[in-house]
Length: 115
Image 1 (tube, rainbow, N blue to C red):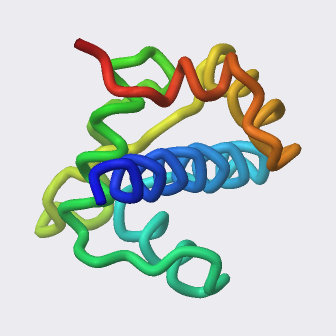
Image 2 (cartoon, helix red, strand yellow):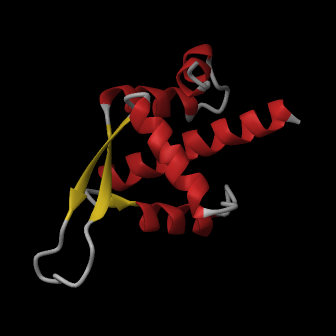
Image 3 (cartoon, one colour):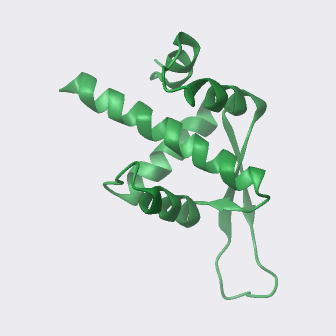
């Protein structure tokens, strides 16, 4: 049971990285709500909660795979700032290796829990 949850979490982490990479490639802002919509729309991964998404984003930041910054919209001052994510060079390597779907050892090492 624990291994299944770990494998599902690793799959979500990789899928989140792929999503952020796609937004970045298209020069679109990758923020939490947009990432959640993209994950839900392609049907490849079902989010149990948005908390799972934000934990996956935080894990990727902690591992140096993503960077985040707060963005405000000067035209809409009533909108609170949102956190925009950008993939790092290390994150790009993980995505390119993980996209082969064979999960090479280096991808497994990057996405494994840190002690």
